[in-house]
Amino acid sequence: MAACPKRFIRQYELRRERSDTAAADSVRAVRRALLFDLDDTLMVEESAATAAFGAVADLASERCNIDPGALASGARSRARELWYAAPTHGYCMRVGISSWEGLWCRFEGEGSDVRALREWSPTYRREAWRLALADQGVDDARLPEELAERFPAERRARHEVFAEVPGALCRLAESHSMALVTNGAACLQREKLAASGLSEHFEAVVVSADLGVAKPDPSVFEHALSELGTRKDLAVMVGDSIPKDVDGALAAGLSAVWVNRSGSSAETARDDLVEISTLSDLPDLLGGLG
Image 1: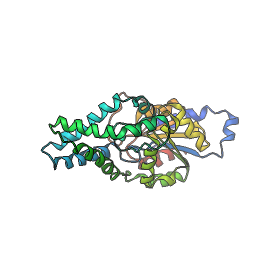
Image 2: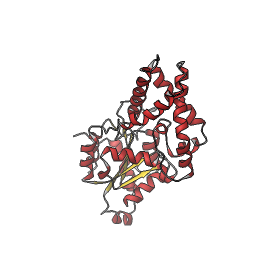
Image 3: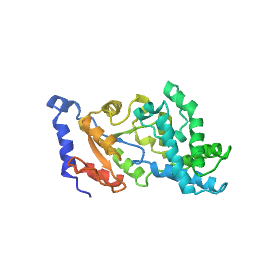
Image 4: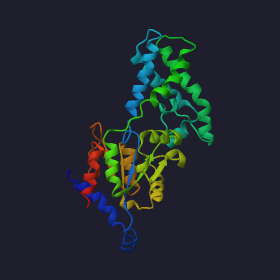
């Protein structure tokens, strides 16, 4: 059994100490809560997108003499340029929708920003591939449309949950209330969750686009806690992003755990950073709190 890091225990205790005696009495029957990020915490995201770009580029290479690796990289870069230049970019930054998600999201919903994205997305997708093909010296009137239509299918074929996640969530659900707290388009994040088969583990699902603001804004964490009917001193956020998940949660008064699957190093050494490499480590880590 993994030892519970002293800094995590202290991080947790500091939040418990903020409750006065009366407040403590009122929460004795409330279960501890866990808030989970989705992308690259529970489900594979960036590498799935990379693989989808590669599969579409391979298809194009069967039709014309190009370097598929260069096309895949070029399409991603061109999509990012178009995404950042669009009038909807401010909204996408605010709620956390990435350029590659824009290449396959259906943008369902009736908000003005969502409608604008839905109307623009066919042009955006086609133009991203057209520019990337042009960078490779290819001028084909029909191929960009074909590749734009193929990418969503390739990405949807790559919904993948990290192998240890289902078992870890089952174990954690025995002693915790759990919520999913994710940035992105509401329809897309819920589509991913449905495909994951993990929905049954969560008592609440909070998607940034539904709130109009994304992690690390404190209101996102506060909304999740309200949905669970619990308090910040009893809650831990678990995610792969230090600025969005960890620092956002700590600033909002929760405890936090960084899921560092890649083994990367934090930009600066810090005493308050609690780290695990896989969700399998989380039950024992939390169990050390008693």
